[in-house]
Image (cartoon, rainbow, N blue to C red):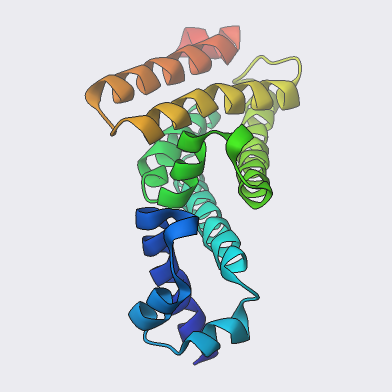
Length: 197
């Protein structure tokens, strides 16, 4: 019962924060829409900022879970990297509050917002790093520093995050993302793997 109430609060808060933002979202409205007493919210969360932080973390974890599932279905490191990029942007659209933070700009973000964005970035870099490391081990990728390359790929994808937050997922966006994926994969392929492809 407790978990269902927490999920109802977070689900409602996610929609309301996404629509109205942190400042304009009212906890009484959240309680009413989640069908719980306002006092119930305070049983689980210290204040509105705590709920907001949990909503952002929930969005980040859901995105990471979808990315990991997509990557795990692939066999080759190249397909895993392609799957990572496609999954990230197809599922990121559901992370409405994270996209709002990105659109606003990290420098104007609250500390909690920056922390969640950095948490998400570091987890994504870890996934990319595991893909690149596997690719080097299998002789598919030729990379001198897999961690540095992982961070570089992660940073380049941040530009696409901003583009996604400002515009809808247009054909131009998809084409640019596909082109970046091709450039990254072609650039890191080992010579013998490139000849086989």
